[in-house]
Image 1 (cartoon, rainbow over the protein chains, first blue to last red):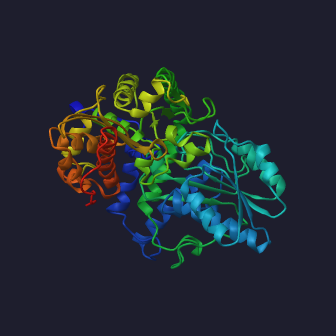
Image 2: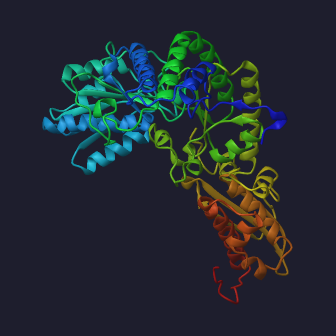
Length: 400
Length: 134
């Protein structure tokens, strides 16, 4: 579907390509150093050394200690294990109330729904039109029986960045565990679990140019980890299964690289983001989703009235532009994205959403192309939309 | 493997019969914006023949392609033949739709029926035989 073989990849929140360094870091452990860390012999012990070296490096990057990290298959598993851990901790203390937000990732929301069926009470905080919660709102929601607050660091769809350190402080003062899904934040925003008072944190390697299928859970020392995968004694008996040595080593290399380049990339990517936001704002009856300033350097999320997001993605794909949408047609259900509904977008507007997520590899020329083709595609689709026609004729009120 | 067949992409990218008909004598609109799909079909019927047809669609790629294909399939046809058009026939003509997109072809079938119903109402006709859905 690409014209002239050009590809403009603007879906980095979905996944990223692996960096050269991350690939090089993992290769030896797929070929020569293929040992099982549980094996006693030299080959196994070399793998064990590499695994523990990577754990040390990742702990340093997160402000944690190596023993506080557990490797998982990715962000979803880590989120599940984090919530199960906090729920078990709470249950032992007779605390069965959880505070979270309405626009968490489904790995969190669906686990909370399940915990709800198991007797936990869950309060989902409003994230307002700007896609932000405040530490004060979290404080007000905490009850004597609250065991956990779970607030994502940065939202995967609209990119808003929550005041994590302030929320962590509130939780610590209240004696409540604080979990943050940092899948979109890791490698892009500073993480220090000590300074930010985080008790449980989850990251996924493929969001920062590492491999897919590997992530980690940080769990503060002293909180007994709940087990999801029963089996062997790997990961101190808390996550069975032969370790993904190559993946973990590569994740460490990728995070190191991302953290080292964070400041520089945030500035350059943020500039491209702002160009896109300014340019797309010129499309009539469009709106940026989420707060303009408190957002990830690479996130651009818009709603365009009168059109449907999937058809927009298809037209852009034909121009070589890879984007994403929160429309129902891309979710496989009748409802559009829960994130867009949570910030108050009406259904008919939420269907017309577009997410562009940038990275350091993107260029000004690519932004020019996007600013050329998105308005073209929106106009083309509006031209055949009966909804748009009614809006233009004044038979319906514009919502944006 | 692509999500859609080449036929779907062709009709999506170059939709046939897009627009409205100022002198339409049968208009049908189905779906709703809340669910992300609205199809509007305009028919111009003379002597029980669909002499012209146009559509407007708010929806995903397969909704637009289904509308386009459906209008092509009924243009120039007698009204009773158009009433026999099934969603399966539309989907087949598009070389298939993904399972979760079949409702788009249903919507196209329903939009045509709604437009013919409207024509019958306007012209004081009632269909001779009840329509049996495929």
